[in-house]
Structures are given as structure tokens and as C-alpha cells.
Amino acid sequence: MSTDAIQLDSLYREIDGLLAAKRIRGFRDGNHLLIRLYRSDRTQKIRLTQKDGTFRFTSIVAKVKDVIPGGINARNDLLFRILRRNALKPVVALHIDAKDRIVGEVTCTTSSAHHAEIEFYLTTLARDCDRFEYILSGSDRN
Image (cartoon, rainbow, N blue to C red; front, side, top):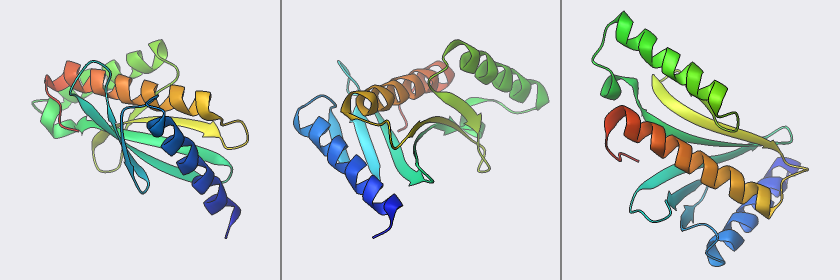
């Protein structure tokens, strides 16, 4: 088994422990985690990956076409909102991916990751992406 696979298995065990202890509400299915947000029925799906000593947690906020009416001005306004939000909230980085989706991302080194840090990153990613999704669309699509 490769080092990356061992580290990912270790991450899964940490997350499963957080779920069992009810530190995070939701469930894990392979490399996906569905987090039920605190005091809400809203959920956010997170993808868990690992490469070269770094865990990467990503969550789709929305498809660009679903949250802006179109045109260059609307897209520029969205990009400005993403940049401004990234400047104000440094833990979660938002970007538009190659599939034209707004994606939130958190990375952390595998060597420093422990349950408290993992819990913080996952809950912050889920909360921030859900909040931005709600601001943009008013709905819960994830």
C-alpha cells in the first residue's frame, strides 16, 4: 500500500471517529463526506483527497450558470465577490474550476493533521460553502 493510501485511510479513521463521537453530523461514503450543518437541515458535500503529503478537502458551492444571469458584467461581479470573500475568510479558498463551478477548498499537511484540526477544516469548509451558496442562490443544492 502506498504512503498516500495509508495517509488517506488514517484520515478516514479520524473522520469516522468524529462522526461516531457526533463531533460532526453526517456520514462518509468512500472519499465523500456529507455534513449536516448544525441547527439546520442544510447539508454540504465534501470530497476528500490526498496527494504528496497534503490533504485536500473540496466542496462545490454552485454552478456559475445557476447563480448569475449571464454576461461579462455579472461574471466580473461574481469574481469580485469571490476575491473579496477570499480576502476576508482566509481558511477556505474559493475559485471557479474548469467545469465552471464555484468550489471551496481547504488544504492541510498530512503530518500536522489531527482530529481537532480536521474537524475545524471540515466544518468551516461546509459552513462557508453553504453560506456562500445561500447568498448567491437562496437554496441548498448540495
